[in-house]
Image (cartoon, rainbow over all chains, first blue to last red; front, top):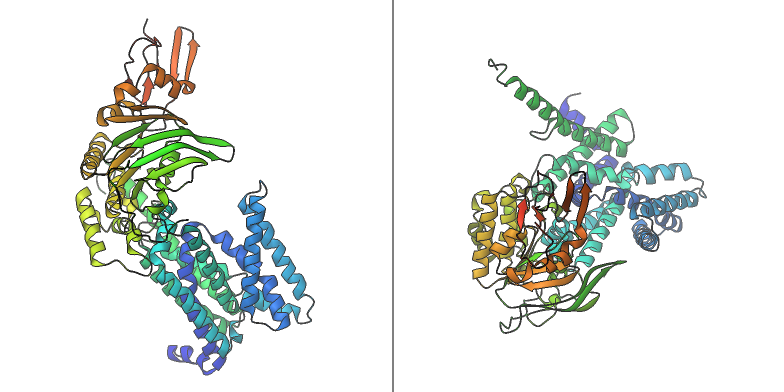
Length: 294
Length: 300
């Protein structure tokens, strides 16, 4: 089969076309939001949030309501509990997050185990079910995605001040607390939007890995977000195709591709990559006066 | 209640620029500031000195409206800090994330965010103000550099430009000269001069008592409480310095005499050493290089 056939053959299946569209949209959305997480050390929080929405998702799944509603309710409750635990005890916030997310996750799994299709459903919730994306699902992803990106655009400069210099945000009398909650809410909404494409267990990779890769390649935030989005889309599309031809799970494959990109850039990025720095260090050694030939 | 992108409350120049009345700030169990009362007129130029933990940063935070006093009142030109966006705060270099993907221009433009209001992008006026601010501090050539690529002095100048872009009327600088070489320090001091000449009220926290006494007509000696305030001559007296730094000095008996160790400073500043504890004599304040020991023997 030639390259064109390789590309077009899967597209003869409507479910693949839908999967591709979902993968592209999520590939743009997650890294843009993930940029803030990478810069502010919110990775653990993001992962915890993804796990903590499980009970909400399961309950709404079982009663037939939209999953997003359950997910958001669950996320808010979890955030509240984390706040209460860290404020009312000497435990660090890190500990409170761990306790709440593990407990919520366990609750979700336990609730889901009451259903006979437990194993399949759990796999889909954890690792995504991008091949099962419906037309409606696509519209929901588009709408929520545009909402999140729109809010980021609207509040871009305020978020920039908040994340770079929180004291300046206070000095300029920006509504810092409200903005911070808005940002956390956007992360929660992004997780919910990406659930079907990549699942709870791996959505963190969607958020963080392309953004981290972009971080090593850029030095301005808009550039970082653009490169991250491009990487996200390419990783997801390539991952989807690879999973189609190798007949393996799609969500995890997308994450593997994104992680591979990270690895390559980590080693080779000009000026910042590990190999680059090692090569530069040894060539500097060769140029010492002891070796005038170099 | 903090206003969102509020227009600056117009300033009545007859009122004190900064006024603190019995201000105390308590964090959990620690009292960071105790009963500080202070009045500064417009255009004042004050060096804030004191040992580590004296509350210099807290004082700045409470003036900037970043922290609310546990007791007492803070007033900027007659009203609480919450109504003002005219306070320029330059933080210590060590608290900034220098790896953040922002350029010099990005940082200076952040100073305009208070004036821009929600849902607006930088307009021509904002870009002009930023350009003028960068010119004023001599950083135009570095406009597109990522901030981590700059030297200490250059970083300080970028944050000063941010304050200029804010069109601030107050300038609070937290240890701007620490760790800078002499030429950079002089550059910053001359910038502060120019800014003050435009009517801006300036407070600079410093560890270097000598430099502060030479460069600033007014000093504020702080150690949780306000110990002294006025011209350097009046502030830098033995009783005052003992009251401020006393807990940070240790007299150690060694094999061949006594050594007085002064622990006044962070890394990168000068230590204060007093030649004698004679309360009647005026102290000779001598800098002791950081690399040598932080102390000296009393003269015999």
